[in-house]
Image 1 (cartoon, rainbow, N blue to C red):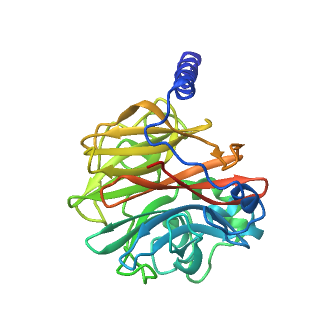
Image 2: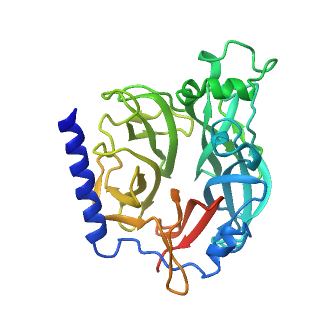
Image 3: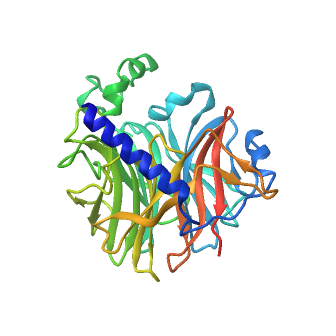
Length: 359
């Protein structure tokens, strides 16, 4: 155990040193306006800053639709319920903007927290999105209660006391679902069963999908617990399907298993003919960058730093929020990144920040 722990520590230290010492990232980011920090902390919606008063929000996936507008799908839950309600009281809402940086305006809820007639009875969180053959495919995670709740939720919906008491079991009930629509406002039709459940190399959970659609194939990176390890050791696996509803066939080798990772953002660059993935390396102040030419075998890029978990403001100062996670990368029609969306928490405020890539 000591040797394994020491080895992991050395690997992480080496990775961090590489990230810090490396030259400019492959996809450098622009500064955001000087006012963005204060607007965020005051919860004032503005270009580059998306907040939703009365709600905690976490992560946003954005598409450009045929109407020329940018449609964002984000996870939100009532502020009064506190942080832990992300797992029990979250819904997915829809906002719209004229420009990729916003400002975004809330439009409607597309997936509610309660869905009594489906497998996904409780919660809708961590949206991921892609457009395929004129359809909007909205992936999300939800709690499949059938193995842990012995009552009919349509008649006796779990109360907060039950949620608190059974939080570990609830965590391990999380699965990936998909809902499909023909227009940004919906209605989104939920698939009647989970798209991904734990199997093969991963156990307990199937969560945090990132999906891209290319040449008739859906490529998904998701998170599960490594079946080879005791307890919860999060790894990310890549799978493919010819249908948005699966089944997805996952590669047996994780994208990366030297450290725990999560919150992938995936895209395909048609000019490079390469898949890219940015993700959160748990416990670190950086997001790492991986690439793959076939979508199956992944490795870190020559410069593994995607970004430091900080923002450069227009006046040259650096903003270091407490948490920066959930990267989503919006690309142009050729797959070149144009805008990065990040979930941010700092000083009792949370929301999403949009950062443009350098051209």
